[in-house]
Amino acid sequence: MSATAVMAHVDVLPAEDAADGSELTFLPQRAARVSMYLQAFNGDKLPKLAVFDLDYTLWWGDCGKDMQAPYTYCRWAGILDKWGAPANPYADVRGIMATLVDNDISIAIASRNPDVASVTNLLRTIKFACKKGSMSIYDAVGNPAYIQAYGSGGCGGKTKHFTALHQVTGVDFSQMIFFDDLEENINFAERLGITSVLLRHRIGLTWESMIAGLVMWRSKHAVSEAEAVATAEAGEAEAKDKV
Ligand SMILES: [Mg+2]
Image (cartoon, rainbow, N blue to C red):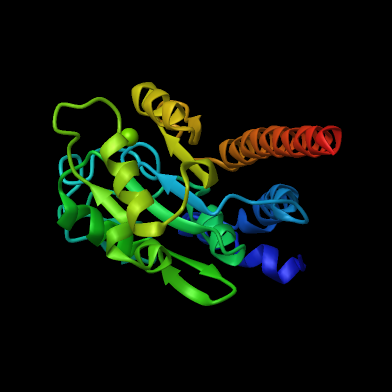
């Protein structure tokens, strides 16, 4: 990936960095870090669908409670809510979304936050630069049905959300990768066969967690492929014996 492309992924710099002159020392460090992580997407298999929780996964706080729509972007303060309180995503979110889009990995949401209007408004306000140009997370998701946001109706985890996502996307659970800050949600998703990453409390989605998820997914995928080859070879051997 070219240096220009890498820099496109680091448009997440807070405005104050540019204003106080720290951009000159900060930018190369961040670009080098992101460039290293981007290599994990090159030349290897990738999952088909990346599914994200919202609150405390993409941003700090409960959307609709700790911060309220409408959200607006301000050059000097980032995203602000109705009352002027910050509503920015975690620092790595924009770059990760851009990388998923650039690598044709579909994006979906599985959230137990029932305030769809507030959630949708914030997803539309968080924008990032990718090869296709500037787009919001909402644009990157592409299909409103890929946003499953509602309570679990007394059931644990997000099984209902994942079942709906499987139906609407046609993607098997084995081809999904999931990120959430609640262990309960992770455990239920794992039972479905979804590679799932528990995020650190109040740290949320980071490049490190994304790469950890990719490594886990590839390792499971390699095992299942090896099992398929072994089964096929055993079948062939059995067929030869019968002949
Ligand atoms: Mg959460």
